[in-house]
Length: 321
Image (cartoon, rainbow, N blue to C red; front, side, top):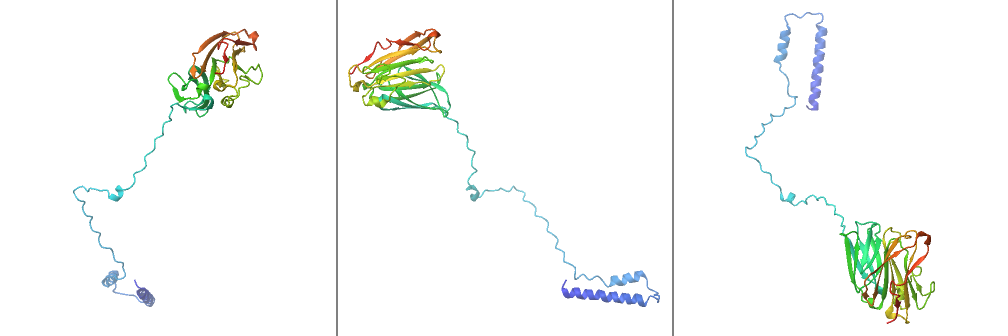
């Protein structure tokens, strides 16, 4: 309804109200006759109702169309087909538990062995090579790096965690022919030691090579003398241990270069028991067969004494070729 129409309507209502008030006031004391309530209603109805200001009602909504009788086939657009599919859940890679060992030749006919056994963390294993045997232990990553004297030019090394779990490494040691090697190995804490007396040296002198004065491989490469290698975890109960003396016989500076003997110390661990010792050698690149000796160790009253194995290497003397 427009603003003008609202004013007109309001004025009309006010005029009507004034008229009614006047009528009531003027006719308050004048009785009205001949007019009934029905006549008043009839007169009001005859005038009709002004509907011009009423809002227009919306048209009647149409009936919904009937669904088709046949099924509607839905299709996937090419745009949706091109979407990258959701990534698949990645499977967890299983831990590889194979034992792998590599061999690298070094100077002085030594070999560096690198063992990787990721499922054998801090575990003991036995290493064997041409009659040599000793026990070692992997680290917290299942690895072990060892430097081992070769006893054959075509050297084969075997690391065993058990009868069916082994790792094998091979390498060629072409310089082995100029070195002589003397090996002893034993089981348990036997206190067995190899002593080499070079160039007429005596106990404790400069040419005395043993566990207390091992020297190194550089000394052998230069031809000045030999060196000792100790193998096996020292504090491992029941493990195998070994000592190997190496002398550069092909570069020796004198005749009667060295004298070899082996001794066994009587300890609390071996007193009153049998001690089994194995001995072997490699001379000119040729390995000898292992020799086994069983020692009846003295009673524990003799702890601290030593037994000298004079004939273990047949009173061996190393002589320059």
